[in-house]
Image (cartoon, rainbow, N blue to C red; front, side, top):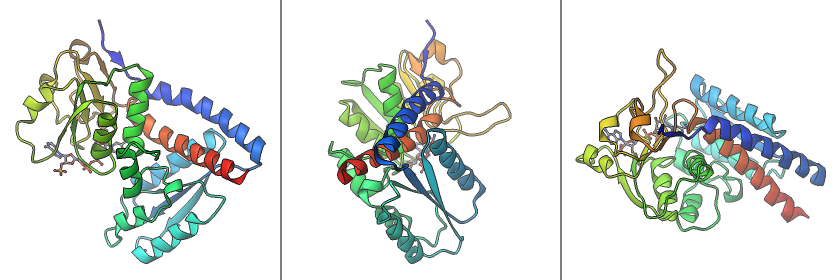
Length: 286
Ligand code: NAP
């Protein structure tokens, strides 16, 4: 039997329709449009593209984005001042600081300056801590999007051994905590891990979050595993992920294709969480 394709592209589209209905209802109820503030510092073309995609996704569901563009020589203090302004702006429901910022800026301090109720990208230490403790918080968008996708396809998590390859603050670490909270037994691997192939071989669920094209080989993957690939590396034929996905039909029980698996879920989760923040703000103002 062929492996199930965990089709993030199709699921994200389906969610967008439901979000658009909720946005319409909120506008009717409050007369206000949910707004995501996007902050882009400097002129990195890839970051500019991501910010544009996020703004477009907001508009597709009837929300707005407030685009803040700052020069490449912005200081930490200047960026903190801008975030403080957005934190108290009642028209702004979510704040997205596009990563990475120029090296002279203390990115962690700036992420942590985002008000918790507007941290719809799930980047603050406070938000991470709350999520890890099982308290309400917006999860980092890529791992949260992966969790939504696994849930949609009815992938069983409790008791499974999940191996997360990568431990970044935005992806590997929150992914591991989310899987742990879903009752997986979790192993986290990183660049100093020894015997990576043998560890991956034990995984019922494997998450590639490593940032290196096809680093995780198909021969390392256990028959019947669920394979989640967060990576995307453009190639002449479209792109590859962090996992060698060839022949997955013969190996995996389910896998995320690249492209069209994890990628579309990330921005989708960002706008979903922005809408949730706007809905919560509306409840407080009633
Ligand atoms: P990152 O910050 O560069 O982190 C990569 C992680 O992989 C680090 O923890 C690193 O270990 C580990 N690593 C590197 N080489 C390794 C090796 N040989 N063996 C085992 N572990 C190794 O990357 P990231 O931001 O988490 O992104 C990871 C991937 O996800 C990338 O492909 C990125 O494009 C993708 N991504 C996709 C989305 C999306 O929207 N779809 C969003 C974010 C990221 P150390 O900690 O020891 O250095």
